[in-house]
Length: 223
Image (tube, rainbow, N blue to C red):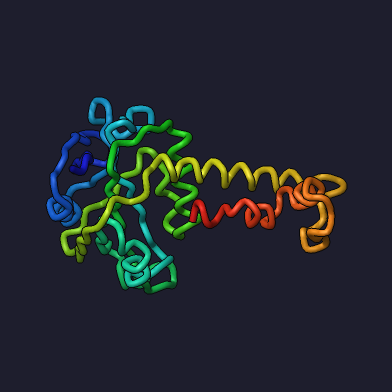
């Protein structure tokens, strides 16, 4: 089941709906409606009106990043819909490239706050190179009657709670690294150290560096 809202207006009249299949939602993408992954209080599209607890999809918009072929490969194990947009393979801002929307159904509704959602989407934007505007809670998209819709079945995308934790850890580590680079005596790159020193001293020496992530096997655990 996919929950969403749609309207013929830009802000008002965003009534909530749900469909049971990816194919059915594909028809929404090809309609003349404006649609959003969120359902809103009073049917009015506004961040404070968003019912995050009823959202169960992630929508990513690719305007000048990866190609459709690359997206198919990246998400081949997961349920998803790819839908080309009106500017697909047309000149825009000096570029002609694949432009499309990727819809990822989730196994359960979101359990998150507005700020957590924005941080999680910012993490996905860094990871996949999609449009930065995707983290907007009141985000909506234009339907396109001539859209090429590709439906793919597989398992559900990663548990949102797992992505949320990854995002928090990622930004926390990077925030600490930024603080460190602005100190008077920043820690030197880990390549100046070796494993000959006592373990605790070695760990301290690589604090806030990518080497520490290797020791903790961060990328193996969190992809």
